[in-house]
Image 1 (tube, rainbow, N blue to C red):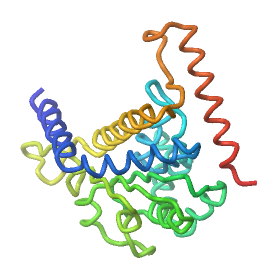
Image 2 (image 1 turned 180 degrees about the vertical axis):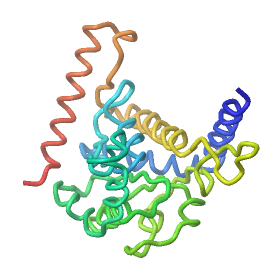
Image 3 (image 1 turned 120 degrees about the vertical axis):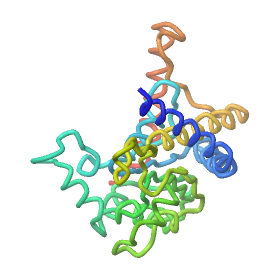
Image 4 (image 1 turned 60 degrees about the horizontal axis):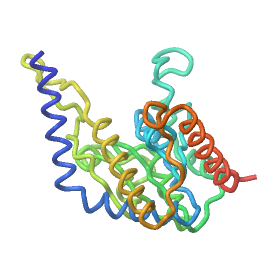
Length: 257
């Protein structure tokens, strides 16, 4: 079990590094999110590949609330098929296609009170870079959650910049260039056990909780989706419906026609 425990220890160290070095950026991001949600707007969330995971972590799930708007494309996030139709090769190709982000963005109506968070460990794919660029051109503050080391180690693609170059706030995942955290004896060339998902989820939930705290202080926290185990069936159902109604109300204004 030593290898598994090594990954856990590496993960704990990673979370501590995020806490010690990224708290200021997380605080600024949370302030932007609370301003957007408190004003009745959306914080639009985007990611490709496995960066779909922190997007879904933000909303909807237990302990989350309306105001965060998940945007993902199945063509770039449906990885369980692996090969054949809808396979990984296609997904990795599509997320590097210039111009696609603008097509995605054109489906939505963005208001000045909105904000955007883009998740990408590498921060190099054309779609995530141009999504952030397009959001900023629309006047929205952009928060990038990315690995600075991994992004700097990679080569620039056709769009000519990295996600972190297109953001107002950069939150560093603090993961290494190769993402994986453990090198096994006898397997030095290929480390195992990626750390970016753990890091991205931690950042997402830190923003979620701090944003809730700020909204609560201002009397503007929307209904929080809460488990039956916490509040009982009747109250849980009420909170679910209230949260979904509020999300639908905001979403109705964000869809382009």
